[in-house]
Length: 110
Image 1 (tube, helix red, strand yellow):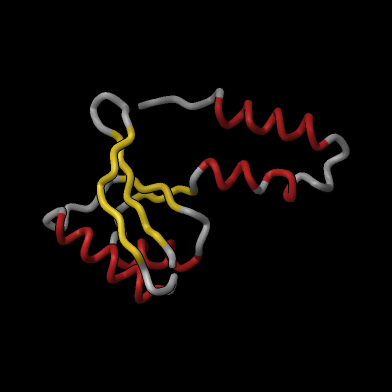
Image 2 (tube, helix red, strand yellow):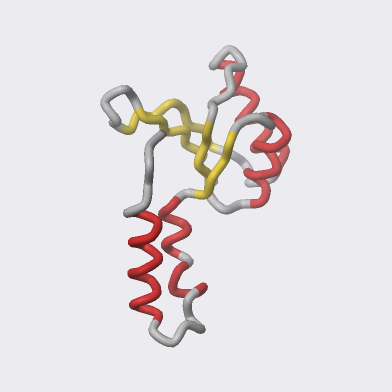
């Protein structure tokens, strides 16, 4: 059974669980119901940013329900796909290390 979790960061930069749901399926209708219920619990205050898995259904749901929320893909899932995406590179290990350094060492908080 699919599990949806809403995790945030508090003022101490600690991860906190904001909500969760067990879902019958991972389609747009199910995600809309879960996100609508979650937003209702937040007095319909949309988050300014959200990180998601790379599922088309989640992206479509966020675009429909929270059009002004910036969404990005989770770094864990991006890094998990690196070996497949860099398989054609001559030296994949070096390319993977350079990509990780580029992403992780160039973060500016504004």
